[in-house]
Length: 116
Image (cartoon, rainbow, N blue to C red):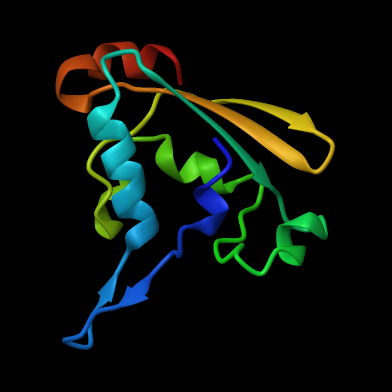
């Protein structure tokens, strides 16, 4: 639940390329969720100091970061394989609690477009 800020956005590969590890982690979360499965994630959010105090926070997120994983097209360029249904967000002091539900564009586009 409280781990996404510890996943680096990118890492250097030995061959000199970049790997989008954060996107890969989100793809894997999506893959292992059952249909209509839910991801609960809590993350300290920029600009609150708690996002920066812990030196292991290497993926500073804003309240808009989760919206990257909701939608149908623009995310594909970075390797995102699937998207989530519209998320629910709750602020708890400096932490944002994101609740994202799995949807497959191949099987659930009609459901997805109804929720836009």
